Amino acid sequence: MTAMMMLGLTALMVATALLSGVFGMAGGLVLIGVLLALLPVADAMVLHAVTQMASNGWRAALWWRYVRLRPMANYLLGALVAVLVLGLLNYVPSRPVALLMLGTTPFLVRLLPTRFKPDPERLAHGLLYGAACMALMILTGVSGPLMDSFFLGGRLERREIVATKAACQIFSHAGKLLYFGGLVSAAGSLDPVLAALAVGASILGTTLAKPLLEMLSDTQYRAWATRIITVIALYYIAQGAWEMFRA
Image 1 (cartoon, rainbow, N blue to C red):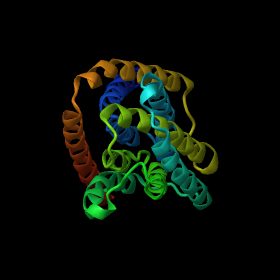
Image 2: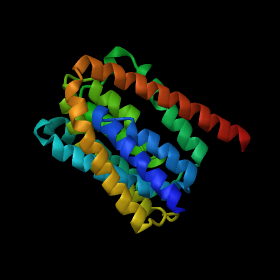
Image 3: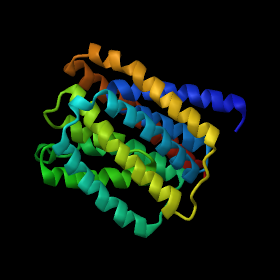
Image 4: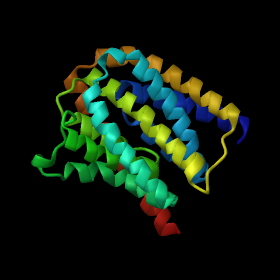
């Protein structure tokens, strides 16, 4: 990777960390799409995991008073089950398949009947969504759309959603790093300079986002979060379909 590419990627990481810092979502979804376009799938997953662990770890530290332990515990129990099961399968999806899964997830969640809408406070919902999100995390690199639906479906306010999601995502991306860094035979290598830039960019973008989140109301937060996810999802469906057709 050239110096100019590294500089451009670092700027993108600052921007995506800012986006995720405000809405608790979407930034990782944008970043993984770019990384999948530039790097092999395993390499992209490893770099994305390092970047997102730094971003979410700093976000959780900034908003630690708002982390809600019950939804977090419910979610992580399900995620642990998925890591153990998928670790036995040793599977890495192709790029078109990963992009299509990224794009279709938000729309599939919206088709669920009302009685299946998630409640982060309920153990059964946490186990189900935690396992599904972790599986999606390993297969596509992110679980944002599905995880967003899980937390937006409850009664948490915007800062509680951002903080609790960030805490959960630390462990989710750690599971992805373990999977692609140690469990998958096609594991990628990570440039230490690029990794350091990724961590610094993630912390900077997350810090800049804090005052912007404070300015939003809960209604504005939910409305904009839904719009952003929809636009990104449509793009990934189009991109994945194009790559699959071209192949």
